[in-house]
Length: 552
Image 1 (cartoon, rainbow, N blue to C red):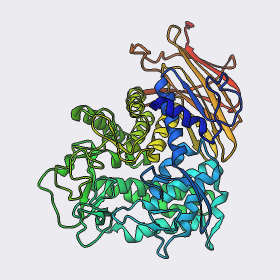
Image 2: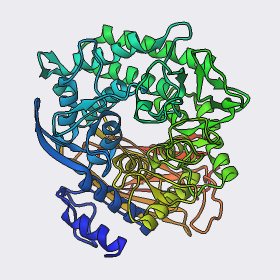
Image 3: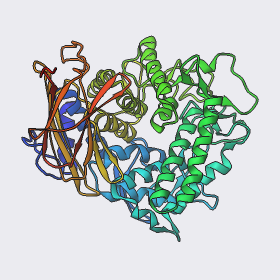
């Protein structure tokens, strides 16, 4: 069966509600998530995301109860903490609450007395931890925060083995603060891996995922971004549940970490964070600081660890490095990679292999989201199309890809699905979830399209149909929802027409909601201009066009 036919067949078998092909009315209420686009590649990519989650979903009984969750991929049947945090941006629009939370609850039920968490568990009762990493506990908190965004904070008070979920989450982050902080520098430490990777330098076999006597310790930008984000998200959950004093402590920790990162890791002359600083006596005979570790740098941008100016320079570096190293997409995770033999383990011993400079949509999707959110929307769209076309050609979402885009590693890789869902739904279509409500920031520019998203865990939906008339320079958004997307809709004004012709913001504009003139604000983020209008999240039509009336 051809790849496209296989994808459609699998899509028809998914157990999340989907509309029929050619669904005529995106604005009608419905228990489904779907998109329409002038770019058929986006629709095909959304199909691959759904197919990947369908193939990765798993269910079995565990000590904490019946588990409904997602494996990391065809080659990784376990429930991994770090992957779970990445999957939720896709699964929240397609699957019910048990698929969001049951895996995390089982992880918390296995928490060690010191607060540490395992890396993974499986249906046979086994569990383990890759101790070269320092992102298991932070990933648990980032998962919990995203779940809270969807279903609210009440679940955080539920008990797991006698302690509340929120209490266990705080103990998990305290474990990192006690066991994995380099006090002289005030930074989070981990083994000398490749940025976010779990394979350390000196071991040639499976021992490479476990810290040991040969471990070289470092403090890398990826772990700092994770800890910074987890501290702030934990503070937010504590604030919502009435623990303002604990929230203040974690905000203070985050602020201190940010100062340490700027002092130790930011490279002003280069415009990006160094991959890591060495904590044990060790130096490479080459300029390691010249390597652009995209994964850690993009975590710094998305977490807010990077300032707006730092974020801009990081994104510009990513765009430049893709051209310089001739990669098929923006997803190259380490440019340049380590030379042959620097790492002893064969999976990363060669340049552009696996974590050593391969293309990973797991992080490329996050970079695209950062571009959409930080004033690079016009540049992000073509890069998203590059990734979509690569995956369509490959017939699915793989764990990683070669420099020319050939799929490698695990098939049906859930991390890729989650990150690309963020880029597509949250970045391009601009639909986010925060504090139980849906937010709208359409960034389609001159493209036409429509989207309908439904949150099965909270029975909420929002949809819109978007059109830009290039002749009249008129933007029309027909919006529908259940009222949960109330607040401000921030709409990107196109920077260029579909034919590539540059467009400038007209300055004076006329904004109408259901035919009546309404107040608006104009916001600039980087290169992008947004028109901001209040909405009640119900069925409304918004029109934005140049104001051609003369005035005296």
